[in-house]
Amino acid sequence: SYAPVPAKEDFLGCLMKEIPARLLYAKSSPDYPTVLAQTIRNSRWSTPQNVQPLYIITPTNASHIQSAVVCGRRHSVRLRVRSGGHDYEGLSYRSEKPEKFAVVDLNKMRAVVVDGYARTAWVESGAQLGELYYAIAKNSPVLAFPAGVCPSIGVGGNFAGGGFGMLLRKYGIAAENVIDVKVVDPDGKLLDKSSMSADHFWAVRGGGGESFGIVVSWQVKLLPVPPTVTVFKIPKTVQQGAVDLVNKWQLVGPALPGDLMIRVIAAGNTATFEALYLGTCKTLLPLMSSKFPELGMNPYHCNEMPWIKSVPFIHLGKEAGLDDLLNRNNTFKPFAEYKSDYVLQPFPKPVWEQIFGWLAKPGAGIMIMDPYGATISATPEAATPFPHRQGVLFNIQYVNYWFAEAAGGPPLQWSKDMYNFMEPYVSKNPRQAYANYRDIDLGRNEVVNDISTYSSGKVWGEKYFKGNFQRLAITKGKVDPQDYFRNEQSIPPLVEKY
Ligand code: FDA
Image (cartoon, rainbow, N blue to C red; front, side, top):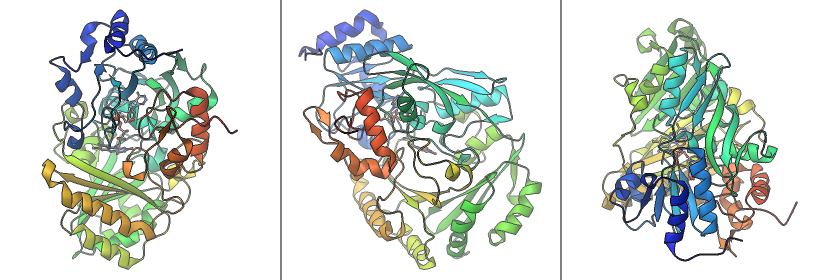
């Protein structure tokens, strides 16, 4: 019923009947390069070798998105959706192989409507996390939401793939605190929780972006925080005992009460212990001296503030302010490579020593380690597609940046070698990874008869979703059996067996 129509003007003509021309950018339009580049965060995907969209559509309401889907299907143009553009592999705006596609860029749809009495908010996908946090705090200083650390991340991609930050031990992931959604499905219908299947509603909250339709907006539960929280950042070099400290932290961090999150950023010869405590310095001090006295935390380390101020403080440092939450023109756009791991067994101490050896090598990146336990680990694995729950001690993210295209050799090699070195010490069968830390090296879909195959998807899919992958694929088979919404790592439809 969607016969291919070769002339691309037909797709554009179809769009122009429903969407104002000023919201459409063809490759030939003068503003196209700026609009495309606006939210590209990884400069590796800006270069001309990348397959770019034929059109960029910047809707201002849900009906524009519905029209884009209807026109795309009629004229065999695929759609990739971009909210904040932070995808590590750039799959929201580039294709690895030649493909006729348009980008639906939601950066003009970023309203946040907070209902302080009901303790809920509706947020559009194109808002950045900082805008959501800011709107919540403006309404109430004692409400918050548990999503990513970096304020410029898009709500759309972050919630779709899980979403966690400094509140993960207290409140889990963003997706599990979503109570309703508005989604445009592959037929161009606008659905919400009451009109979509239970499996579809389950899948959009953590099953990864793109696969299950275009999420227009999300209704979230707002969660209580005290009027004053405490932040500390304590750096320790190897000479100052970093190895013994991380060796102790890997057991203590995941076992602390949910009110205290201490993550570790290991870079060069230094481990920095960064904490958010939902309470005052006065109650934090005795907790630290009973659970983790080795760190030597004292009153001088305490920075007390309202929760909202802790967000830029943790992300950017003491000098950062609330403006940084709303800044949509972040110019930090390095070339970047990322990988992730989950750790279920504590590392033997010599492994920590070797890790600091790796962090001192040429081309070395850094490691960000988030402890689990408390709420994030208490939720059953099947409750949402995000499966990294009971038994996880901590998540590792390996981050590597460089600043000139030609300088990628050593960092890319380091990332590969480091990932290989870590294999014996991290989760196995499958080696788990976090869907929002997208890594194309874990696998790519093969497309046969115009449908992504289940067997190729399983290779990377079980790493992100473990036992939930099959249910995601069956759901995809019901929601989008023709695999219209797809990319190199979208959930393939499983239709033949259930
Ligand atoms: P982007 O727009 O690139 O989309 C990502 C994916 O979701 C794409 O496949 C896209 O098609 C799809 N998608 C986007 N909008 C959609 C919509 N409305 N409906 C359906 N599909 C949609 N994560 C985390 O959990 N905690 C953290 O602290 C951090 N920190 C962090 C820092 C930095 C600097 C970066 C670059 C990234 C992170 N992340 C993170 C990872 C981040 O959560 C992940 O990249 C998200 O997918 C980004 O969402 P965006 O909307 O910005 O990406």
